[in-house]
Length: 170
Image (cartoon, rainbow, N blue to C red; front, side, top):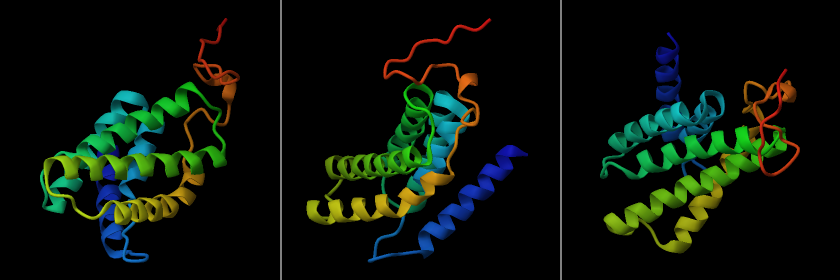
């Protein structure tokens, strides 16, 4: 049942992403799904769901397969890594992480399409598109929250320091 819900949400996200535009730039809402999967399902499942979302996006885009698969899988892994290893969740961290992860995703897609196919747009246009997509996605970071964000003492790693270490459990 949960996989059917994920499929429906992903399908709805593709529809919204294809129909909304600001400054002739479509938002990259699938990054939010990959980030959510990484936060809630941890590294391996986050990377799997992100890659699955990416391969569907690649197949719908009509270009070669791979750039979105790579970038969404990377976003699924990195979002889990950031939330589980370094920080206590706050809404500001959610906004910053979605902004950065959207920038990483769009940059990886642009670079891989530039290397393995013709350059889709100029570098200046790509920077503008990446910035607009990141700004459009950033407010959605407020709503992303890990499972254990309400009780930091339940977390597996201590978030008081930059370097993670295990909390002793009785």
